[in-house]
Image 1 (cartoon, helix red, strand yellow):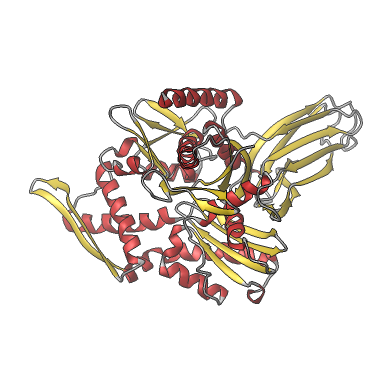
Image 2: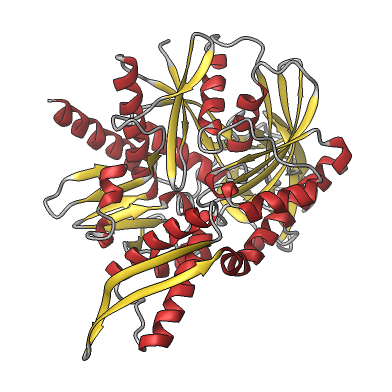
Length: 523
């Protein structure tokens, strides 16, 4: 097997790394940058752009430029998160045939897995250009709190990119691998990972080359995008109060505001105040209107204080699930670009009563860890063993609409567990197995991953048949479920595919289309 690359598929930026001479290195793109914007666009001439070229025309071609697609992947169109995104983003989000969100730009509609696949294909190209050889295999990272549907959609994205995805690993675990490489010590570390679109908190134990995740928690719809949005809302309100003009319906103005907000946020991590100057942002009967204002660090912190507090709720849950106290944690590592914000660093310091470790680059450490894991899977890196956990409880819907857990959250994977269930009606010939993931005692309040029917049960009084339902979660967190009638041996088993993921036929068609476009590009 050839080289295995590690890819951090981020909401805002993506990064690719590889192990060379026993050391992980980040691969720069053709512009010399070690990170690539996770942005995809189609120009008015039909040209597809990825990365910096796509990001540079977000203002002039806002409706045909896709960013933050990771926040949509693996979700249902009707979910609150997708509906909120549809209101905020300049590109059009429509309902797909599988009740999933799709992105319509120019005259084409893309699944979220396909957009992510295009980003991954660019990272594959960057690696191939650097290595001077073809790359076929990769380890791809996902937020620790991604559910099964989001993980499967990410794996589909890898296949669309032309990659054999050897493993999906959690971003905090990848960061821990990079942090721990070469450290011959036994310690417990906390990973606070606040990226562009998601937040993860994980506590891990490192000992003799083994990285074991003890607990994880998080929020897959909380990140730097929300910090940017608070500045945008602040600017919108101020401009409307001063000029009586609401800019929300102007996609170009909104994109200019988002760009300015992101720059101001970065400036405020270094300075106490930032100036925002957007000339000709609008016009009315009296002529052109300009937006000029100043925002201080204190003002910005007051706007986002509740978001930072929200992350600490996940931190508290994670520490509690790990059954540890603050004195048990040896080091705290912060990951993700948003952790550069002084307020975030201070919140982490105050909570853990120690300053975060500064020895890792928050933008690169996840990709480096993925590369280490990839090398270990093919025997290139010795003495590295990652023991991860499933972030959410798994079970089935039972009589009365209850949720019966078979595997609790924070159980080490891979894992296989089974339980005996029975029928609820006399002479019941079949049972429907509804596979759920979540923490609510009511089945409907959890995520439906999939369902299937076990038929052929012999007639018997209710409560007499014995049906064994088994869950299997692999090292990537992908779920398989089986159901067996103990009396007849009749069995049904599936790898859970949520209705909101791509069908096998659609996935193969997209892979074929992308393979053809690759051939045309290389010519």
